[in-house]
Image (tube, rainbow, N blue to C red; front, side, top):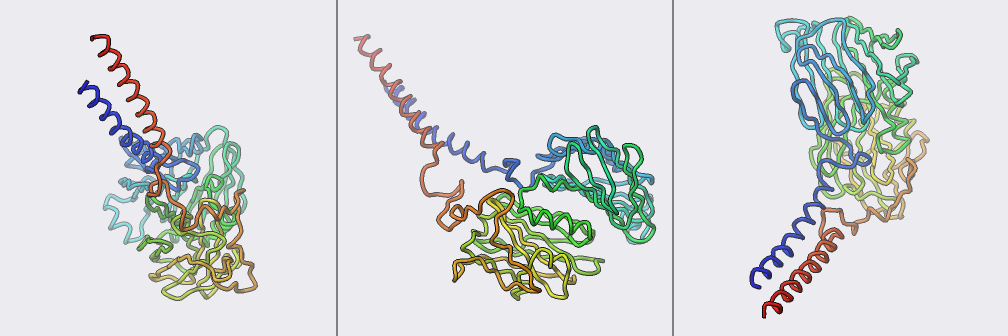
Length: 414
């Protein structure tokens, strides 16, 4: 009988641990594809596999095959007119290839300005692939089956199995059969950026701004900040950003750029619970320590000599787009606080722009009650999780049955 009670006690102690493991797995880095901002790449023997993006790559030449986002292969092959010799680096949700057309190595040729190539892929729902080439070259994108393409100015619109774009800068795109040709120029660096914005769960107005900003070469970069980490996507070569500080209702981002002329928009997408942001909160954005004005998305795209921002949100994400008029190194602070008038103001609206910070897009309601200070995250304290509660109930039932069987056996033996 003593052994029976020891077994019962072990079952009772094991269930909360098991339940907590199940609960924790739901909050791990492998998040639901509908809400996660980014995943994690694994690389071995030329195969790159992430939560959202997968492809094969030749480590020496940078030639890519079967570039796939979700379950859809978009490019059967991406190859180049000029050969490069390079190496690969994979870190978290980011993949890099650095290649040069010279045997003297990356540092020498990069500094001397001869032909080089950088490939940057991100394991995120939009499947960002950014290829930068310095010097004259031709990038060749062979479309996969079921993918169609058309060209409008310097933008390639992809349709069929996807709703995506291939943006080009300082290059001339053309089509022949099922292959896109992007001819780069001798002077400076040329960019080709693939993105499938329909798959990112950010507000609709921000998505539209993102596409227009890429078309106009005004979007410098995009940062994703979630409970499990951050990722910065570079849309303008030479631009850098990092999360410098994150605490309750306050994030701080450092941005800098080398060789970037003119202003750029930096887009910051933050999980709403991290900023505790809803329609009853006020958003305050500071640029180098000074609060800046809120404006409309359209005004942001027009540019200015002054820093300014636009904001929108849905059930999951607060998206803050900040216009940086010039570059050295800057600090951006985003804070949310209770609004004195019960509405989200976030600064005055300049240039006659309309405030869109309180709107709720992307087909979802604002659901402000789900993001107040008293709302607990899945991993926080404040009550027993349902998975653990049902586990304990089940354990008690098992114990009762085990004890009853043991008692019956004991009575028969007597």
